[in-house]
Length: 367
Image 1 (cartoon, rainbow, N blue to C red):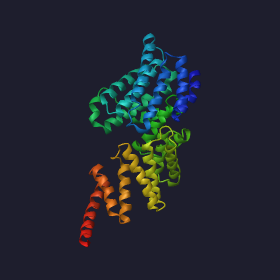
Image 2 (cartoon, helix red, strand yellow; image 1 turned 180 degrees about the horizontal axis):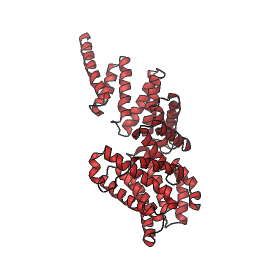
Image 3 (tube, one colour; image 1 turned 90 degrees about the vertical axis):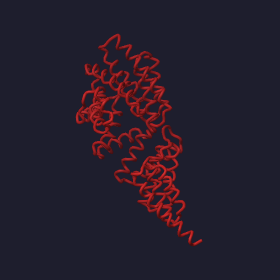
Image 4 (cartoon, rainbow, N blue to C red; image 1 turned 60 degrees about the vertical axis):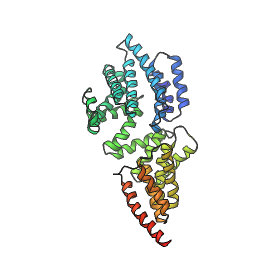
């Protein structure tokens, strides 16, 4: 409990992307407890959250894995001396769990399964200690929910899942809700999962929205929570709030605030383009923001994303309405180069191409 009190501000700084301040707190812990896994685990979480604004960015992977491996090393050292120590299996479960999450993001399914299995094995040891039970429920809740969800949504992974027990989605949700109410180290991580689960998996967007609003309010400089809150406002049609939130994201990108980069810019620019086109009927201003969304997407190589393709679609329509046929075709050509043939914008682009050919024939006859 003493350590928990000492690192509360560091944990809050971590989730608010004040990484230097958080690292200072965690390095103080490392200095005083150099052979304990906690400081290395928390330093690893800093690298983990550096990855979250754009999970395609791999520059923090090695440092993250090194910290988690160091936490595992010292936790194993404690565990070998005393299997009844409550902290060692908890940190082993946590470190292997986070490694598994990174490996799954990187589509390294075998490594993810191996790390996940290790994490679950140590969770079983941790369950013997009631003083850590709210924290342990986080791992249990994630497993119970996603072991069922993965079976339903990724049938190709079923052979790997044969190595795991069957979960229980409803129990998993209950466990994650308990973590939010009672845990310290894993509370925000549980809220992060519940936010996404309620929003998209359980079709309870109002529950997801409430969590998103709380997380953004609590950690206003966390770009991941910031843009997720914007995304929920967009899906609920709350355009007044969305405009303010999206403008704030773009302002923070201009100020080069930590974690605010092109991916967040793409979201915010698209939302503002949509607002100016649909709410204000200002197509010139809308086009400026859709162009920004396109530029941000191209910078990070995400030309197949919906935000990129729909931005081009809007720009194509605006250009066509202004009789700028060549410009419109340029936008639609980009869609044809990048969109899946089943995507709505691809069909729109193919349709416009026919219109454009007729236009060219007409122009040739005139000349």
